[in-house]
Length: 552
Image 1 (cartoon, rainbow, N blue to C red):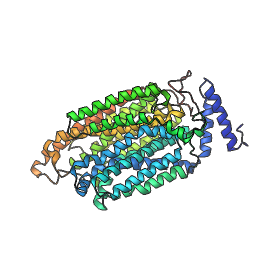
Image 2 (cartoon, one colour):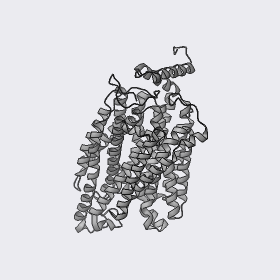
Image 3 (cartoon, rainbow, N blue to C red):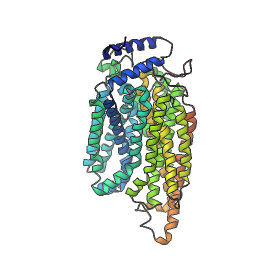
Image 4 (cartoon, one colour):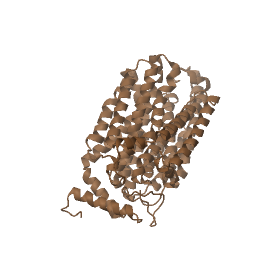
């Protein structure tokens, strides 16, 4: 059927016939089917287009992560600009809150509507929010604009991950995801430093204006240069149901569950973001979030497959374990790269620009590890060994970073960063591969939105926790106007003050250490079998096949 003289159309028809037979047969897909699917994907995606697609996805995640991490550095400037010190906590939180709360609905929207349209609309919303941020003249307008940008950023993040699953060749999936993840991590690491430098040099507004060209390039590369992105329900590999009308699609969005989930997420984030400490309001918000989440769970279980997040997904061990792995490791990474720039600027008396250079060892190690792991996982089609190895190496690096002090020389702070960055680069992006390959194709939009949400929660919750620990340990020094004590403190008291800042950073770093250790058992529970292609299957995957393989 697909000999040398066959056309691409014939190849696609042959593959679809094979997919129908696979979905109707209890036997797992063969490796020949996997290789055939990869060959067709590669025929659709020449090297130039594949490279452009990966670059576009990388830029999309970079700009979304950059927008998330850059605002904390701008808080003093924004507070002075808008003359509203009481609202500063919302400047960064509004983006994350909107990004997280939108995930339940986004999983449904990407599953029901055109991927292209949804992705483009998300990019437009993100761009409009960025423009309004740059043009804001009041604190309220800026907060609302940040929320709008977060809504669009959430759509771009989820859409990028879904697109990667459906269009990348299976054997290159881990490698491409590793490269994309390295871009995202670089934005998390350098976002605060770049934002602070831009604010001091050309004005804080340009931190948001710069989003426009990058977002435009990302959308063009992902959508315009790859015209093969079709609506999911038009592809036999996704679902065997007939095309639905627009009204039916809106009815299937199941807005009640999305609203309940969004409400519980917002209450949880509001609770952990409460700067007042463990007050009655904080406890009430967290308890309310738990109660609402339980109600949502009962509601979702009642709806079964019509739910926003079908409960059967959470009965799949090979879906849950990489999900938890990503939650713990992303939380540890966010805490570590929040504290390291602070440590360099306070304890080592570095400028913002110098601190960015001092973080390069971690970024370089992360990128190198992502490439090596991507090649290894793509060649072996196994992810668990790399995820366990990454968590163990990152755990060692995290412990060493915890013990840094003001007397640490180049060898220590460079070597410790390399260990931690290499560990994160080895395992973090494979968590997404594990989540997506544990599901059949029609569940990927839902599973992806859960994975993105878990990472957002891991980052936002534990950054708030480490901030609280850091500020409490600093005591009266937390009220100082200067970030670096090196210029503001009398030389006779400098060593004592530096010791206090170092102790505060070290204590807050315990959060990152605990989280990365929690990732190890999660990695052990990930599927250890060889992953074989089954994007065409409609049956749910809940465990290994009889031959020891798992069909992703």
